[in-house]
Image (cartoon, rainbow, N blue to C red; front, side, top):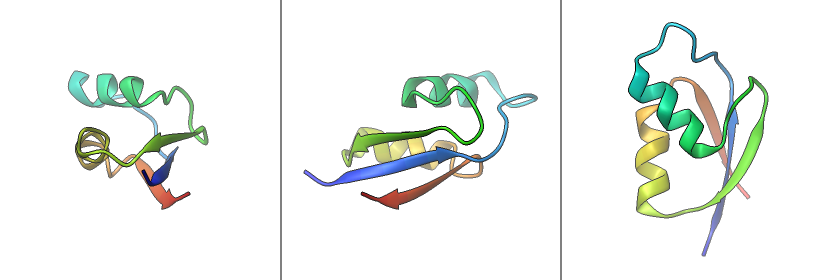
Length: 59
């Protein structure tokens, strides 16, 4: 399966609780942190919810 790299670009401060939890579920804790995930519908849906806080690239 394909991989996708997710990088946190903006802070979760002053964001709704569900967005904070989504970032945490993706494994992101700090600005600039990069994590790699399988490209599954679940992960893509989570990225869609916080796309204004993260950037993505194919790995």
